Length: 249
Ligand code: MLT
Image 1 (cartoon, rainbow, N blue to C red):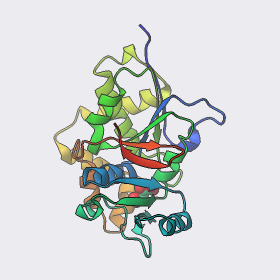
Image 2 (cartoon, rainbow, N blue to C red; image 1 turned 180 degrees about the vertical axis):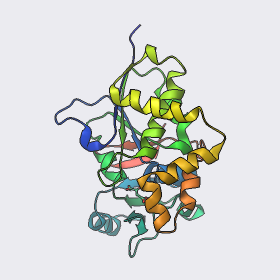
Image 3 (tube, rainbow, N blue to C red; image 1 turned 60 degrees about the vertical axis):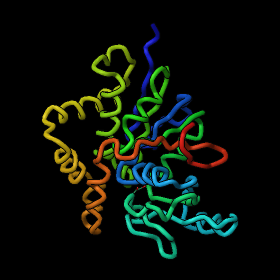
């Protein structure tokens, strides 16, 4: 039996230059881009269009008919003139049937770093199980953590570990896990042993750089939302070169 190969990159910049990426990538930005993408699609958004700069987002919104919503953040805060920030809580009925041009500091960059993959799925704790369901049977997958300002992100690495734990189902030896995947799995399992309910995960995410940034700007409520496992059981899939994130078929 072929053992599926899984590589985990703790930052997009750690993908070796010129590497052939796996046919399927999973991008993780728990705080908050991939959590928010899942929340938006769960709330009935038509889809998201991830762009890397604020200027690009504004220009694209002008061109499209009907006019899409603009969403995203810089330094965690809503962008001037945008309809929505990057809080998953704000992606509610307002986004139903709407397209959202979306730009965030690290998340949208991580998504675009996976242009070489045939399928790109977005994962977070809020859609963990449904993403794992999509991975069953695949023989090569890359997991890409978005990071926080170029730093390795505790929350994304824990989420990668949780995903690997669920997927490998106690039999990691049946998979070919690279060192990044083994580290993520170890980090998750070490902590999961002390699991006493959701508070543990919330506390952990609070300690991360991304969590501290959100606390500093008064958006710590989003940490709890992001720690709610399987709250939004939808799989956002990014299509390139169409550059659209929609629910996976
Ligand atoms: C990012 O892409 O850097 C984030 O999702 C940051 C945030 O929401 O604060």
